[in-house]
Length: 166
Image (cartoon, rainbow, N blue to C red; front, side, top):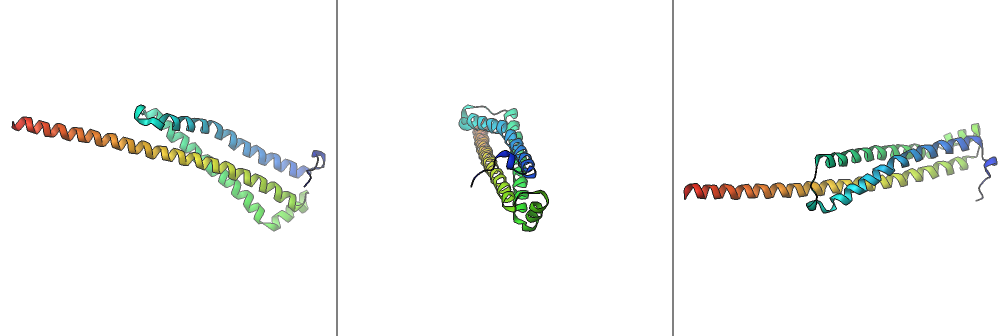
């Protein structure tokens, strides 16, 4: 299919695509620093037994996960709105009749941005899963440390009882 030169693209479609692109770019730009921070956190904690955890690092993990959850919901809503628009044949026909281009051109536009939102959502979901895995790993390692401390405490109590009775 041949793309229309910019001068031949209907104004309403151009404006709609610009708005959709701006919103998707906004979400993508919000994702970039979170991705970098999440990757850094995951690399740092890959060898958790060598790195001491701080409350600041755990807070950074929580905040990044929260920001990813927000982006996930925004990408899902964006995609859902576009899918709903695609699913309503009457609205698409009315849109084409009232402001211009054909129903098929609107469908192509909405499908493209719906797929782009889905790709962004898949990326965000992958990061969320990675951070959740990291949280579980940290939790297991902290539990292991706690058990070791309890074990040491029991040894000390047994030793103390042996000394007291001996």
